[in-house]
Amino acid sequence: MHSSAVFLIEFGCLILGLGLLGRLAGRFGFSPIPLYLLAGLAFGEGGLLPLVASEDFVAIGAEIGVILLLLMLGLEYTAADLVSNLRTHYPAGIVDAALNALPGAVLALLLGWGPVAAVVLAGVTWVSSSGVIARVLGELGRLGNRETPAILSILVLEDLSMAVYLPIVTALLAGVGLAAGAVTPAIALGVATLVLVLAVRYGRHVSRFVSSDDPEKLLLVVLGVTLVVAGLAQRLQVSAAVGAFLVGIALSGEVAEGASSLLAPLRDLFAAVFFVFFGLHTDPAGIPPVLVPALALAAVTTATKIATGYWAARRAGIGPKGRWRAGGTLVARGEFSIVIAGLAVTSGIEPALGPLATAYVLILVLLGPLTARCTEPVATGLTGRLRRRRTTSGALSAPAPPGAHETIDDQDIVGRT
Image 1 (cartoon, helix red, strand yellow):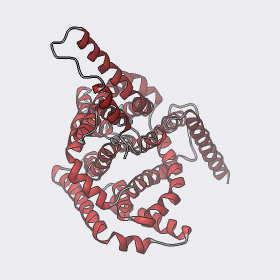
Image 2 (cartoon, helix red, strand yellow; image 1 turned 90 degrees about the vertical axis):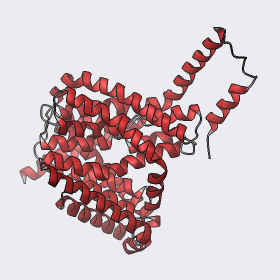
Image 3 (cartoon, rainbow, N blue to C red; image 1 turned 45 degrees about the horizontal axis):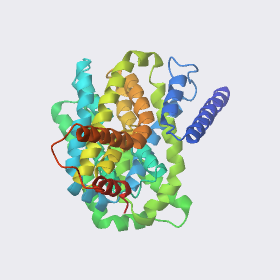
């Protein structure tokens, strides 16, 4: 009875603290993720007040949090939209992976962490935070901007890539052989392809089977199916998160909308627990030694993400201002980076990887909303100054006709459908 009381008090204080931190973040208009990570650092090993009675429950809640994050992400997209994005925007996905995964891999190798840690850190630096970016787009009123489809296409391609990447990382961290390691991603890719085909052709029937007019029954059926599929996926050595993501893709229409509204509070609760859990397994004393590499990595990958968004928007025919806005919006990292780093931390592959990933995400989850707001005006101001300097230095070309620059700027600023 005593241990039960301690558990309730300890876990209740944790949830209450997270609620207050979330309210604080909302008041100042930034993502609560860094505050949740800091809370985990405070309650973990080497922190101010380590958890004792509720640590096991937090671990289970964290796993459910990852599953719900990926399920809700899958519910945002239909299978037809995913197939269309793959066909149309795959070059942007390739550029995104090349520019943003490479810095993480190179840093891990330079630090002497080995090839497996290099693959893990590449994933941490590669994937942007869909949750933070979606929130920023809404707050800035850019959901209807012309560059927004280019941003969303990159996020979708990153999400789909995780269906293949996560099983590969899981196999590498498990230390399986090359032949066995090749089987796991092959199974994941085959299952993902099968689910997409079934969702495109029979998605209505699946949604009809799950559908219910009673919100309670809909919630129980969707959550139950998701947990079962996630468990089976993990049993087959495929990431449970990938299984949840595929369940979300298979559901569509009113079922997906209803499930999203019902599951959103659960996702927010368990996602907060997940970020705390990651912080629990990160020793705060390990962050200062890796702070300089984390800052350097953040600086490099901020530039590469801006370049990625700029290139993707330019390919989509967006004007210069929209290109800069797209690049600045993609900078934030968050949930997926922590999921990937969490796999490495629990496997014990490299003790310093967890603190580095924590510091890296903390930096970029705070910097991301700022770059979304400031990249376009700063870049426009700098290019305007360069243009004026070239004009005043006596360029040989004839002066531009009156109003030429204003016409281009007007086309770039509005950019709404």
